[in-house]
Image (cartoon, rainbow, N blue to C red; front, side, top):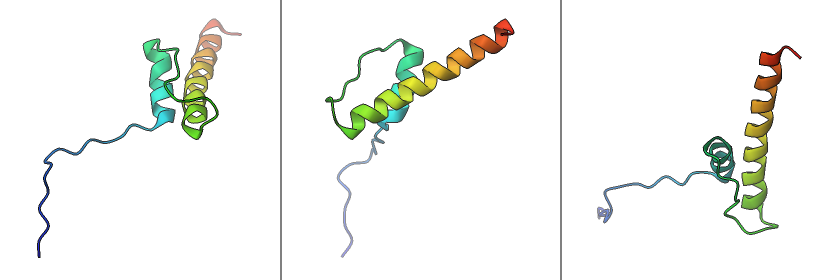
Length: 64
């Protein structure tokens, strides 16, 4: 028996880390996940990664 797909589109879930990383560059400062959850911590980690990457780029450009 062949199974029939009812949906033709596949929605790919974006990981919280990636959402946080993109959120920094887009100016989104609010974490959409509940506090004390893995997704909340992952979002924060992505946001912080983007922040410190930006900070490193700025200090390199200033020659410090």
